[in-house]
Image (cartoon, rainbow, N blue to C red; front, side):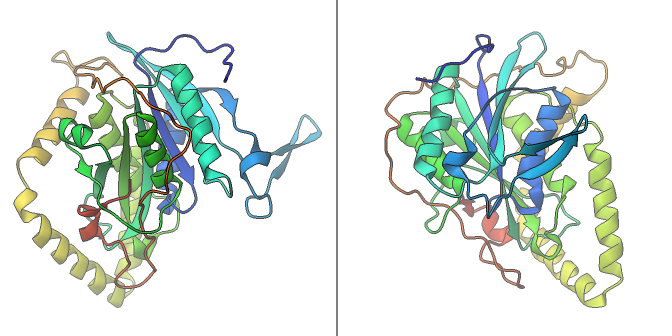
Length: 335
């Protein structure tokens, strides 16, 4: 039994999680949750015991000075809660940590225990992978779920992927077995510029999250950071003719593949986001929900589950295992 002290009763809570490591290309996903914590001043109310899940020779603790006293920060996963304001407020439970080194089933069950005690209605797990996608085009975001009804209701892909997986895939499958609605949002990061940070991918994940749970996310300086990142990569690519030619090839492939999708739902989604953000005209207050999703109440038991599907991290080559083109198919990829 998990006992929570100092946590008030939450309103329509959604859990949003991201983990550093294999599922976090360019640190795009973990940075997105860190952004939400910072902008909404999240209050940490729990941390998992690092001794249970981490190999400290892989994820080492760090030493720092505070008031002349040496202290140690241990790698772990922390949970915080934020209330998103507006006429119809709701709470977000933010989970940010590092992919565990061991005991993944217990790790997921512990997070599900918190979700159960807090009355979480939906779990959204953020991830990022390397792909054949040009940095000059919008970041491809795929939303996947193992739940057929949820896929239809929230316009998501039902995952069909089979292969190696990370903690994102395992946690999503654990949610499914426990009867907790769960969604994964994946950003495709250009494999030729994979080093963190990648504010453009982080921004794309937050925009998709905003659409999914119908809240207005304060973006702060993130849009400007994303523009500066793209200008910097443009300059680096221009200095190398082979890289510039390769980027052009990716652009042509991407534009050809997405031509039929240049209208319709993508434009409608962008227009709805514009209406939420424009000044005047009675837009929703920051964080206000207009059409809150109401997934079915969680049911079932989270005790045990089988190993789920996930995705294969691509190699740094001209043809990674997960390409940008596959992002919208296979990449239903990740659970």
